[in-house]
Length: 249
Figure (tube, rainbow, N blue to C red):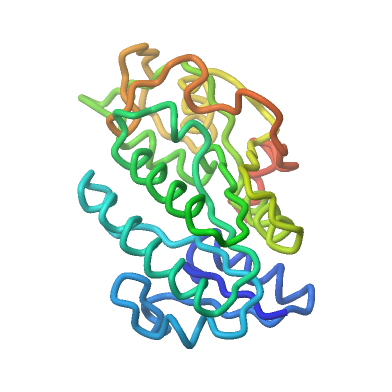
């Protein structure tokens, strides 16, 4: 089966492409560098032609509120229109756990807009909402750093390894469309500030993590369960310590 992976050269995309190719599928890893651009439409029709499944892992080059909203709306409309014309049987998209519960986070609002386009498209679909990636812990710490200290909310956090995300994406892509949402998360849940502190200590970063209930997450207020699944979720297999060992090798 031909599977088109938009964003197929990124962190999750490259891992997903490798899994699907190993399983014997014809996989096209699409990106602007490969001549497939979901914003301009360049190369899109040819890439989608003959694909049974399209996996959308595209990400905005800018996280500014308006830019990210414009990106996901334009990219989503163009991609879904090309899929409808080509008769694609399953659209898979990666979104974020809690994206509909943090309206003051511009990126999360943009992902909600993307999800709504998918739901209204008429194309069979599955939306995968993932918790934050373990690979983003350094960036999260950097974002929260002010005056040499890292202010992080004590809200619950359940980060997942990119390898587990890719495995879940590949599994969902090969299964029947859910026409709904699947949530995935890491195997360990703890206060956000404790996980960030644990990470910094493990990598020898001397910055002090400060527990701050008012600390924002990329502009969004974090309540106790803003960033974790509220119901059933597929849990990854790679815990924090295992991920840290793997990331150092």
